Image (cartoon, rainbow, N blue to C red; front, side, top):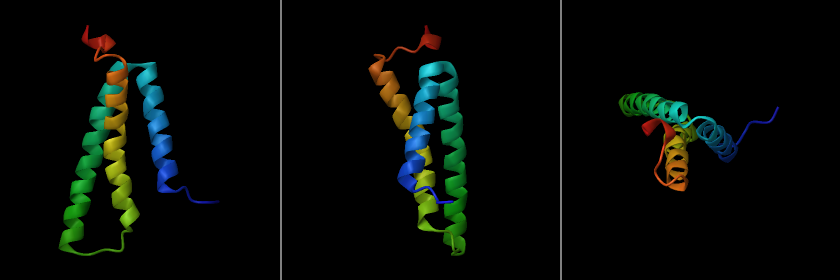
Length: 91
């Protein structure tokens, strides 16, 4: 079985988050906040561990983690921008 490249993983994440925003912006906004916080925490811990002692973790792991932080935020910004800043659950 062939491994997915980073671009393909980012595209899958983008589509999943976009479908989530189109389905329910309330759930999507909380999932975006929660997943971004989780991935940020994991990235910070992994970066600190990497600074303390070098490991054989590939660079692509850190790129994936950064993408996993930025993609939900990007999709949320695109959705909010297209909807004119109006979310159903804020009204």
